[in-house]
Each structure stands twice: as C-alpha cells, then as structure tokens.
Image (cartoon, rainbow, N blue to C red; front, side, top):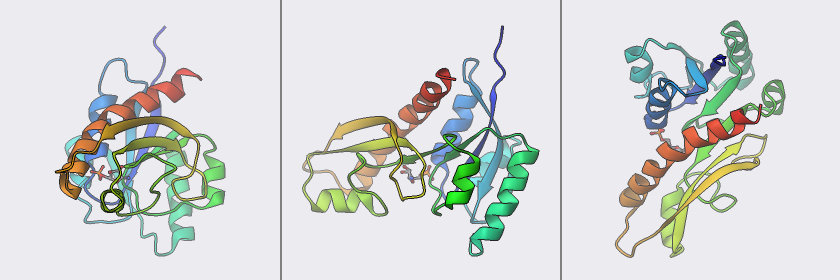
Amino acid sequence: MVKEKLGTAVFISGRGSNFKNLINFSKKKNSPIVIKLLISNNKYAKGISYALNNKIKKKNFDFKNSKKAEKLALDILKKNKIKLICLAGFMKILSKNFIKKFKGKIINIHPSLLPKYKGLNTHARVLMNNEKFSGCTVHFVNSKLDSGQIILQKKIKIKKRDTIRSLERKILKEEYKIYPKAITKILSKN
Ligand code: GRF
C-alpha cells in the first residue's frame, strides 16, 4: 500500500536554498512529504520565487505583530491540513503556544554543531574561535532558540584557509543532505 505523503509547510525569511532543496526532495517518489505551503515573514525573500515556480501556495505574514501573524499562520496551516513544519532560515522565534499546537512536528536546520553556536553569525564566531570542526544540525523546535532535541548532525573539518563564505558553502552542501534525511528519519517512526 502506498502511504499518503505528509502535508508540509516550509517557513523562510530569505534566500530559501534549503526550501528549494526540500521541494526537490518532496518530488522524489519515495519522499514522505508533499510541500503544500510556503510561509515567509519577508515579502522580498528570494526563496518565494521557488514557490511561484513550483506552484506552491505562499503566504507572507508580518511578524512584527507576532501574535496576529501566528494566528493567521495557524488558520492557513489548518486549512491546508499541514502536519509538518520545516523551518529553513526562518528568522523569527515561534511562541510556546504555537509550538504546542504542532508538538513534535516542527523542525529546524542550523549551521553549527548544536548545542554549540546557537543564534546568528555562526560561521564568523566559529572561525574567530579557531574551531577545528563545524557542521550543521537538524533539530526539533522548542521555545528556546536552537535548543530542541537533535535529530541529525553532520560534522565537517575546517581548513586553515576557510573563510566565512567557504565555510557557509561547505556546510550548506551538507544541509541539503541532512535535512531530507532527518525528515525521513522522524517520519519513518510514525
Ligand atoms: C541556512 O544556513 C540554515 O541552516 C540557517 O539559515 C540558512 C538559510 O539558508 N537556519 P537558505 O535560506 O536555506 O538558503
């Protein structure tokens, strides 16, 4: 019996390269998800173009009033029968109340070896501290920044000549691999 693909929403704020990667993943025959909705908090986010190109419904909410934005988001998530939320470069922190409504069904990707280097400007801080390794992490979202239970992590070696840009590039490549893997991992347990 073919299992029905899980209705998924992706939340972004900017470039959206992970969103694009997740769209490609969702189109694979064995993918457990179908991306039905893009939510952004920035109407100029470059990643919105991937929703347009792939005929994915998109909504922009101004999170300056986050309570209102979350309420509107919850409505549309419900309407579209969304069961999984993937944050991908979404620069807002979701409230406890919102997270409760999707308990265990919101995940995020972060470009560091969590619990190290939560928050912004990860690569710059990693290089400044002369770390030998960095990487990326997919984790469940809780109400604290970059702090939920880890699902998958990939470590990479830092070279002496690495810069913020080269490190970002190397880590993004790994992000594109582990985000789909992490989704498959959590959904295969259902
Ligand atoms: C990625 O490095 C992701 O790990 C972090 O924000 C960046 C988003 O990049 N949360 P993109 O918008 O997916 O290209």
